[in-house]
Amino acid sequence: MRQIITSTFLLLLIGTVTVQAQRSDQQERRKVIKERVEKRDGLQGQMRRGPQTMLAKLDLSEDQKEKIKGIMLEGKQESLPLENQLREKRARLRTLSSGDTYDVAALNKVVDEMSALQASIKKIHIAKKGEIRALLNDEQKIKFDTMPDRAQKMRRQALVRKRH
Image (cartoon, rainbow, N blue to C red; front, side):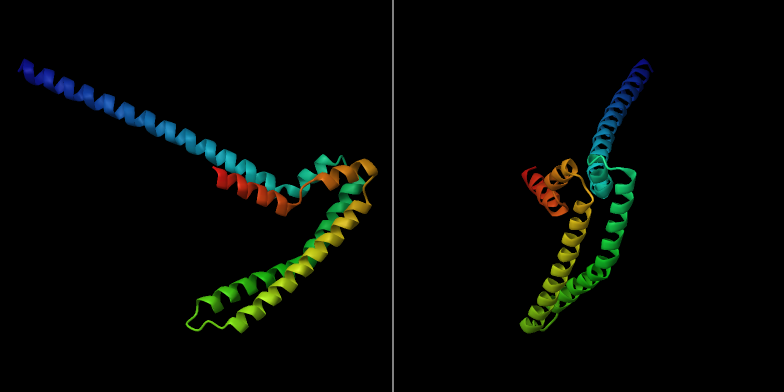
């Protein structure tokens, strides 16, 4: 009887230790996952807040902020239909390149159309950037000109991801 009680006690003790060890492992994993999510959200949050971050770094007056927001809104309204068309062309390109027949001429035509849309979008961005720059004083222009554009940020982040 004494041996059964001792054996039962030892089994319970071993079970408790095992459960505690697993629980601490899970807590560590949760902590690591939480840190990763916070870090990722922080980076994505910064990317989402691009214009707001830019406005804060330039020390703009309220009048400048309002005018710049208006210019940015105008630019988005002009470029959004083109961006939508570009997405449609990308989908068309995928459709043409994955079908039974591979029509190089049709693919080249879609690529040319995509290039024209990308050029139009870039021209809108350049024009709006010029309008924004015209509102700034000399000190703000220097800060504005040294800020990397979105494409540069994305390339830099892609390089960082490749290294890790």
